[in-house]
Image (cartoon, rainbow, N blue to C red; front, top):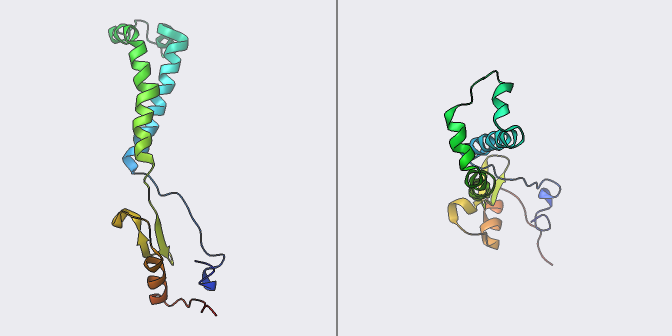
Length: 131
């Protein structure tokens, strides 16, 4: 596009499209759960004494019995499921920070040449005439 529109040269930038906020929150919560799992794996039932709890809660023994299954879910399956929502597949072209020229999210496809050229000309940019 920069070769067709000299005004765009040096002004075209790209960035990652942000994932939905709930996915970012779930990812942060998963990190906390994984860190807690590491603490339990290293310290076992002694982790409760770090927090001033003298008696080990009954739920700990249930978790301990199913530790392999829980570890598979927390360390393998949940990150895999969340990663599907982090990749948005977005391809957005925005002019002057507010005018959307093309949106793959809206149209469900990548742009064709005319999808980009026509809106840029309508926005007042002058293409280079081929000799």
